[in-house]
Image (cartoon, rainbow, N blue to C red; front, side):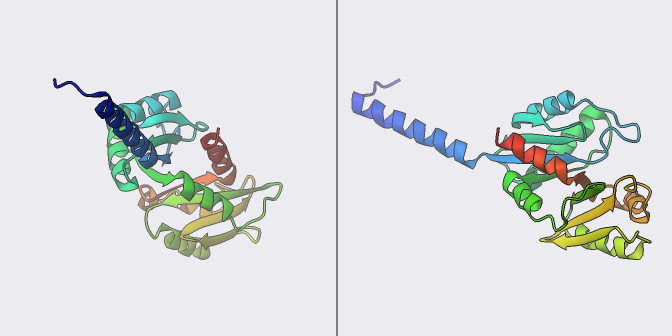
Amino acid sequence: MPKLFPSQKKDAAAIGASLQFIDYQIMKNYCAFLRGVNVNGTSMKMADVCEVFSQAGMNNVSSVLASGNILFQSDKNSAELKNILEKAMSQYFNYEAFLFIRTEKEIDVIFKNDPFPVIDNYHNYVFIGSENIEETLLEEFEKSNNAEAEKAKIINNIFYWQVPKGQTLGSAFGKVLGKKSLKDKMTSRNLNTFEKILKKFNN
C-alpha cells in the first residue's frame, strides 16, 4: 500500500468525514404500519418483528405499541422497503404479510391534518394504504348505514374517520373494513398512535 503524505492524509480524512455526513443525510426515518397483527390467529412479539427488520437491513429499529408500528431508518425508498419487508415478514412468520410505509415527515403531516376535533368518548382513526384507497373507503362509508355521530373525510389523500367509542367494530362501516378485498390495501390506526410515533421519533 502506498504511503500518504500528511497533507494527503488530511484530505483523505476530510473526504471520509464528508462521505459519512452524506450517508447520514440520506438516511430517512420511517414507520411501517403492519396489517392484521395479533388478530385472527396471527400472533407475534414486537421484539421478533424488530429483529426481522434488522436482519432485513433496517437501522435503529424499534416499535410503538403492540399493534405493529415499527420505526426504523433506511436510505431506500418506500416502494423498495415495502417489497423487502413484506417478503421478510412473510418468510419469518409464515403468513401473508401486508404493511404500509410512511416517512416521519408524512406521518407528521397526517397527524396535523386530522379534520376532526378530539372529543371524549370518540375515536379518531387514520387509514394508511395503497394509492386511491381513500376514495374506495369514502364510497363504502357513504353506502353504509353510518350512525349520525360518525364522520369521514379525505384530506390530502388520507381517509379520516370519527366514530363513538364502542362502535368501531359494530358500526356498518366498521364491518366493511373486514372485507377480504381490502385486506392487502390498507390498515388503520387511532390518532393517538400517530402522536406516540412522532414522540418516539423525537426522543
